[in-house]
Length: 443
Ligand code: SF4
Image 1 (spheres, rainbow, N blue to C red):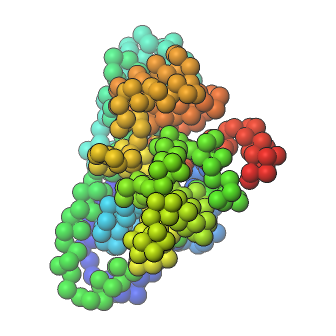
Image 2 (cartoon, rainbow, N blue to C red):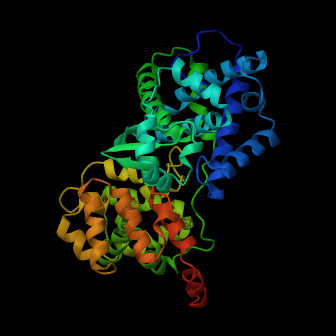
């Protein structure tokens, strides 16, 4: 397993370098494709799907890394290529925050796959070698808390080789999906979940490397190199959450009412009521619509119809049309914006006076949020959601809101990570919603 801490130092033929980068891009395409299958990242199905696609596409480097002995020469050669590909593609994706996020997401998924594919011995060696040593729960503690641990982890304490413990803030992914026993702020979890701790550490390191690469990118003097690198990101088509065949202007209002998360429902309502959104609101909602699968013509019609209730068509065409075209990759660099994650929206700049973007769980006043929650949640549920908000767990609050309003068992869904993901789950889990929308002729 590579941690990609050391940049490659050797010289390489341009043809070989291109082949290495192309192969990595093929891997990224598979990681994009698997999103549409809705497997949980790290699940066996997720892993099997990616491995079968790697085999199908004959991505030799990655096949070697997944199947060969770590000590073999082919494995070592492939490991070297893996490191080169990571750094080269990093140069291609270091330019903007959006591209960096896309790159880090893919790279962490690839690491997750290779980590879960390796033997326990290889994992332990990797952890020690890379100074990633985590505290183990003592045998006495396992015995003292045996009942609780078994209930939380669903395992037999006498059969588990060891348990790790770490402060819960260091491994929220595992706490979020309830694969842990929490005691005095410490998360006790099975060795198979240590990958989340490593990923968290690598994530920070990847971002730091990307910042370094970004700062140094302009120092590359060779035009061919910069052209080569700059062209790389455009090759990977991003897969979307546009899971609703036939989403259109005619059903967007119903969809917003029934399946949008609060952030997007708010923007949609304001667009309909106020016939305008400030820049950040336009960006947040416009990109969401693109990934929802609303066709370009319908999106343009929606914006035009609303905006021209307040301003003339000429002004709309001159001032706003370009932005909406840009969101659909029709003009300028013909660039595809990455879909916004909750983390991005939550950490984006605070909405100021009259701005309407952001995450209601993070950015709204307690009273405004309560008034909204009261429209479709009950007393205790509202209290639970508010508790999560007070603790800063906005995505978990949003997940609880989804579960409560759609009657979904909370253990059934992972924490919401994007507004488009929210819609996807809402539709998938609402057994009667689609039928009723179909019967109403709205989809
Ligand atoms: S947690 Fe995400 S989906 Fe939910 S309201 Fe906030 S930004 Fe929207």
